[in-house]
Image (tube, rainbow, N blue to C red; front, side, top):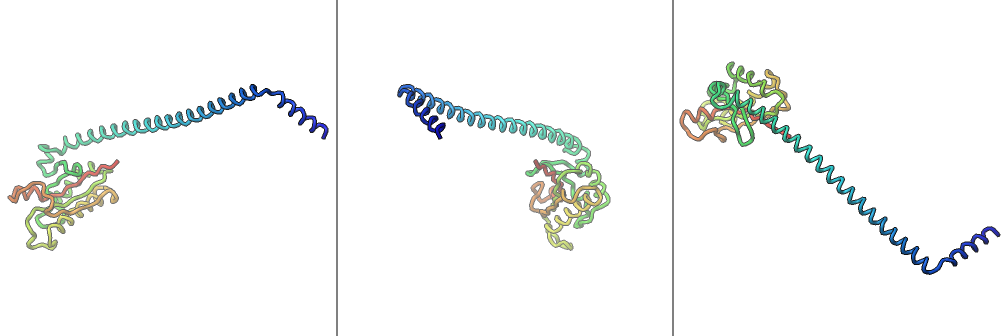
Length: 221
């Protein structure tokens, strides 16, 4: 108890010895120190925000570089395909051509190469043609699209051009999956009948071009 009382007395005496001027200086110094600490906190927040901005910028640059490399790779592949299947190549003369469409590039195969008139069963030459294309389709996501000319079906089990085009697309897809090694999950089909002609016109030459199957190469990133 005596020790405690003595310490209290000492502290009171020490406090009493501090002049008002010294106290104000001490308070001012404390205030400055608090301001400096607050400034350091703000600087830390600013540096953290700048660090995050730089990190994001670096990630964006890396993504752009990867995209540029991907685009260059796809262009090289397309150039190679065009050299083999583009217009005025032997394959085009044989009824297979790589053509641009609103959704990307597609192999356009003349209907007469694949099917007899009004039929949805692949011919033997048609099967061989698809087998030759198979190496270009491996690992790709594709959509097989059937198309007809504008002449209405008169005598056929299919009833409508739309139905016939869908059945032909299905026949091609089945062959690509079962005989050519394309994966089921990468192949889809669509039938458009006469609704998406390759060329305008109702003469024999135009109708021949419109009777076709297109195998769309779907590119996804």
